[in-house]
Length: 323
Length: 248
Image (cartoon, rainbow over all chains, first blue to last red; front, side, top):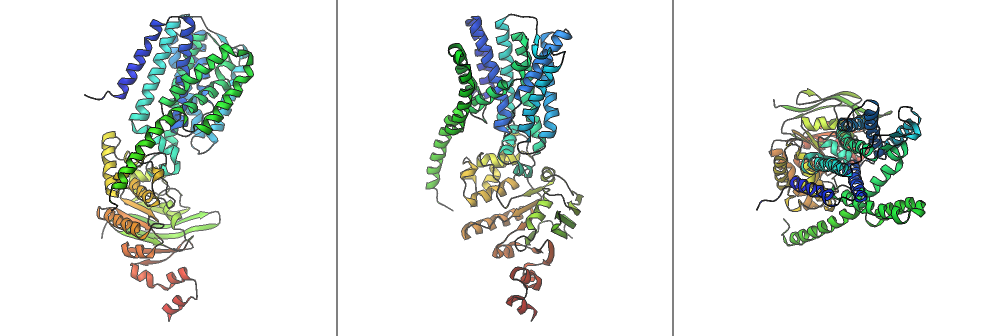
C-alpha cells in the first residue's frame, strides 16, 4: 500500500474540519470555532519566523492590524467587496513586512525583535491619531451576520496557510535552510545561503496570511479599533501558543493554540471577575513552559520518540566494529 | 602550466591600525595541496576569512579561476566553488548529521531527491553514514570536524579551505583525516590547508607558505621551508639554537 502524502492528510483534515459547522450550528460555538482557527493561523505564522528561522517577531500584530484596517478602509471608503479587500489586506501586510524587514533583517541579533516591537507601537499610535481610521473610536463595518460563512472562510484561509507552510518548510529546501540560519547564521553563509534574503522571504511569507486573517476578522467582528487589532495581546497570545506548543514544528503551534484558546475561553467564561489574573497567568505559563518544557508540548513528545530512536541506533552502533 | 585556481595579489586585511594580513601574494594551482603555516596570530585564519569572503580585503585583489572575486559575499563564493571549514567547528547542532549535509547539497541540487542522493554520497565518502540520523550536537570532536568537511564537500567545491581539521584529534583519528584529505585531492579538489601539526602538513602539502605577523616570510616545497632560517626564527625566536645553527 502506498503511503498517503502529507499534503493529502492536510487536505483531508481541513475537509473534515469543514464538516463541523454543518453539524454544530450553535452561534456561540461557531464563534469559538472561528476564533480558535484564527489563533492557529497566528501561531503557525509566528513560528515560521521564530521557530524555524530563530528571529523573534514582537510585532506580529502589525500584520494583523494592517490587514484589518486595509480591508475595513477598502470596504467602507472605496466600496470594495469583501473578497478583494481581504486579498488587499494580505498584500498590504506583506508590503509592510518587506519595508520593515529590509533594514532590520540584514543585521543579526536583537535588532529585528526591537524593530518589530517598535513598529507595532508606531502603527498603533498612527491608527489612534489619524482621522480616516476613526482614531480611538475605530471603525464599524456593515454587518454580515453569517457565522457559518466566517467559520468556513477562516478555515479556508488558515487551512491554505498551513498547507503552504507545510510545503515550503517540510517539503521544500526552504525550511531546512531557515533552520540552518537559526542554528548558525555565519556558518550558513559558507554553504551558499544568503541569510538576509531568506529571512526577508520568511518574514513576508509569515505576514501575508496574517494580513488576510486580520481582514477576515474585521469583516467578521464588524468592529475594529487600535487596541483590538494592534494591541500587544495579539502578538503576546500567538507567542504563548507557539512556545507552549513547541517551536520549529508546524503541529506544535496548532496544539498550543487549541489548548491555550480553550484555557482562555474557560477563563473569560468563569473567572472574568479576576481579569488581572489573566496577564499574570499568561506570564507564568510562558515562564513555566520555558523552564519545564523548553521544546514545548509537541517538541517534548516528539523528542521522546527521537531520543528513543537515537538510543536504539546507539545500541546498534555499539555492536559495529570500530574501523 | 597547470590551471590556476586561486590567485592573491598583494592582499591586505587591516583591523584599525593592525595589519592582520599584509600584502600577501600567492597562487594555488589546480590539484595542489597548499599548506599555510605560521605561529599563533600570524594571520592564517584572517587570510582564510578573506579568501572565503567573510572579510573584505582592505587592499589587493583575489581571483578565483581567473575571475576577480574581491569583496564577494561568502554565499556567492560558495556558489562559485569555494568550500571552507571553520577552526571552531560550526555544525548546525539542532539538525541531524544528514540534515547538515543535505542543506549544503541544496546549493548544487535544488531538487529534494537529488540533494538526498548527493548527501548520502558525501556521508559515505566521509565515513559518517552510520551516524546520519544522530543530532550533530552528539558527535565527537573528530566527528564534528568530519562533518565540517562533509558540509564543504557537499558544495562540490573547486577549492577547499581546511582550517585545522586535524588539530585536537588523537593520532588515529588524525591519520584517518589525513587519508580523507588525500582522498579529496584525488577526487580533483584543490586544497588550501591551515594546520598546526607539522607532521601532517609536511606530509600532505605539495607546497607550503609561511606567514608571520601577517607577512609571507617563505614559500616552497616542505623540505625547503623546514630549513629556512626565517621560518625557524619565527617559530623558535631570534637567536635560538636552531636559528644560529642553520646560519652557521
